[in-house]
Length: 339
Image (cartoon, rainbow, N blue to C red):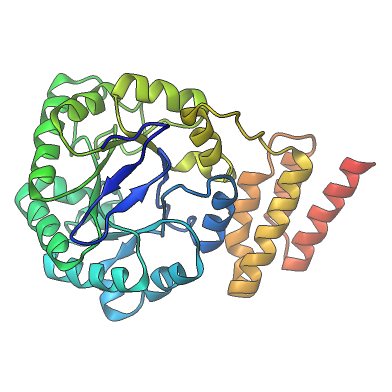
């Protein structure tokens, strides 16, 4: 069943069907999409499928990545766990652990362009070994009862608008479908492009036409207008948004509203952004101690934009020596808005 504003998408796996009620997915973002960030996104998008940060199957196997999946038990709404590795057995064991922790589904990362991951055969490195990639999908799907999906790219190399790139992408994605992937999220760039250039929505459209499983379009979706145009061009079943939500956890909800034909929730103003930055700082410090300040700095830098004095505030926040100092800077900024 395809996603529409009036219907649901069901993924069956080998167990109880899983229903997606929102056409917008939040991409897993390393160092960003922790449970605190997901909680903020959830305020504007209660039904969206969100993801943990990408989890190394080896780390989960050894117990080092357990915190990322153990958080699931405390959260509402559907949350997927995205795994990466090049060893089918390790991926299967990690998937079983994630399912036991409450994962809504398992997503296999075959698109991460980071060299240290790809060089070891994980992430986008699997694009160069379709046989191994298919074996991983098949092995993971046999290990769990929840749905197994894949996030990938158009190919290892190639440029936007290259007809050969689209043709190779179709072949690659058909192999993943045949291996048992129940849904495919496709980033419209090759591994070689990283995040440069324009996402090739035309190539995503070619893949969508060739597959029978749902396809989610990813790349250059940063506004409601982008989402509407992307689906019009690709014919995809939904969109995934990633970097556009950094400092803008409300974006997923805005995209969902646009695709469903509902009024868009307003973008927070300066006072709301400052309050959000303070809340996130306090939550991160409560969860991680003083180290939470280091993590919060990037979030505050992304959030505190678009109002008078924002550049100066960001500069000061990046140098705040303690959480209390950061909160005081945000409090003063709020007081100046009221004066």
